[in-house]
Image 1: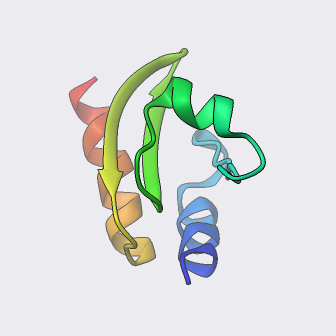
Image 2 (image 1 turned 180 degrees about the vertical axis):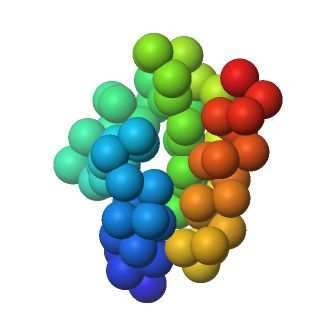
Length: 74
């Protein structure tokens, strides 16, 4: 359900932002280190530091707004 919206947001934000998906069942240790407790979870990092996080499925427009607003505050 989230994958198409995630892909649209990645395309809209272009090369300035890198998107990555993590399968938490295949990589529970990474999910634990990131503090992911529910899915879907969006975690925004900049230079290895967490800037913001957002829980729950969202449309591409909200994902892009979330990223843009968090980057503007950083």
